[in-house]
Length: 389
Ligand code: NZQ
Ligand code: ZN
Figure 1 (cartoon, helix red, strand yellow):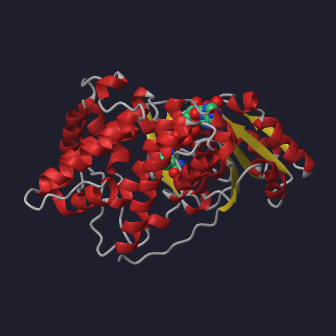
Figure 2: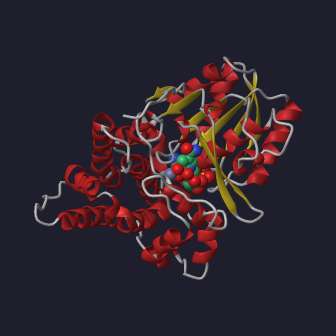
Figure 3: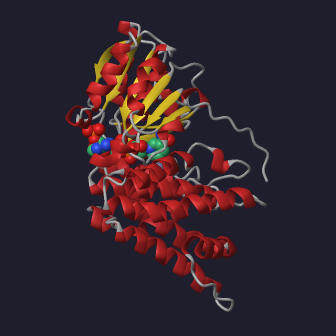
């Protein structure tokens, strides 16, 4: 097991009505907050009223900033930073999915920084302080409600890049599975793909031994595979949503990468797709991950056999390990297809005309690699796009 430091400070408030408790939580940090949200779903569902009532009851004032788009944009982050400075706001309350939460994190890091917030996403600077963040989660997917990550798209050049810092762990997150009842089916499927991707990015590692975290990841994957179809069959199945929502948080709150090094190459590759084509992150991962697996499994077939057998229940062939590996990948693809995800770039409307450009952007013009299981350079990234086309 690798040495590690583990700290996750996010206070999780889980269950029915959790959103009505955020006023009191927010009050511990500030009397005036930025209320940040997306394209308006929260106003249609009544969530906005419940959250603002909770803030008002706790004596917390707020300034609204809606309009976060999926694949959140840098321009709105800049607007949020200005609003916080102008009104002296002391906490960002994000009500929505990963996009809203990531935008809130960028604002939180940007407010006390004298330079350009994009510096944090290019690696030019690291945050040394950030405003506190609270969240009300409306979709189990990105895990941003309890993660160190924020992923933002800079419209100039269509660069989608990530910041990772412990300073942007949300201080509290309200998780009410009922809030997911209104999700459209495609968003549910995208979320399932993202949760599974976070687990698989951690699973495919060169660290040894990692028995406990292997088993925890396998258990979480098997839970998602069981409850994902259940919420699609019955969108008001509270218990299934509760399992899925908590799985989404556990998949990405850093517990499952303790003592092991994750891969993350597929995420970097997917960010090129959603940066340029503005596709949902989960939909992109459903295409990239199986292609990544086909490109890299020969590096460690034993690990892929373990994945096939323990996660998908494949009967192990003692004579032909490769057959077991490929059956595991095929079961993953069949599962994703069964929940409505597409598995080819062409089915997302993406042709092969920009593969070289994306591989180049992803590898800093061929000067760097992504991923740890096998570091992937420009050529290998292009191979993966070819396998996914
Ligand atoms: O904008 P609104 O109106 O809120 O609608 C959203 C949006 O259109 C809708 N939605 C959310 N909750 C809903 C709902 N519709 C009906 N009922 C509800 N309860 O769903 C759409 C997608 O929302 P979004 O926030 O974009 O989804 P998700 O949570 O999948 O977030 C995706 C973003 O997270 C980033 C991705 O790259 C992507 O930009 N990620 C962030 C990570 C992190 N910070 O740790 C890690 C991930 O790997 C990921 O990269
Ligand atoms: Zn992800």
